[in-house]
Length: 168
Image 1 (cartoon, rainbow, N blue to C red):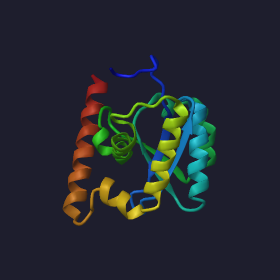
Image 2 (image 1 turned 60 degrees about the vertical axis):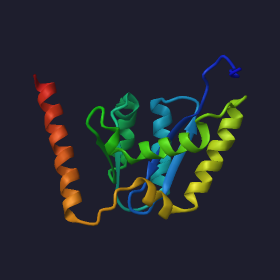
Image 3 (image 1 turned 30 degrees about the horizontal axis):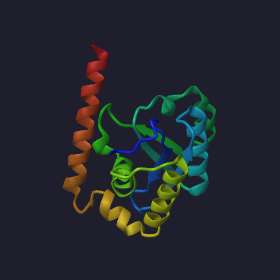
């Protein structure tokens, strides 16, 4: 017999993965809303008190909300870069979610959301203790200019394709 609560419940998580340091900034909330994302952006700004910040994002509606405009205008050191549609392979945070699901969620029955929350928090606390493991597991090693060139040309080609499709 397969146990079920009869409801699909879970956590709503937002995260960044710092490509260079392996640092993770993450946030849990009840829902994905523009307000939630704004709270998360404040958390990111506070985690990096100086220097420029470039966040690579998918095109979720909350990432484009008008509510963010005053915040982004006031925080010029934060730049949002949007990936082409349907390109999770360019977003390293997707690798974090896959890792989390593999270690915490898959093939496990949780009776309560609190149980899920505790295990997610434990997982995040554990991986954040080893930034090098995060880099090794999630980040492409930029050992040569050729890799950078390939990534850039692939990203640029997808952007051109998207632009052409939108222009039709």
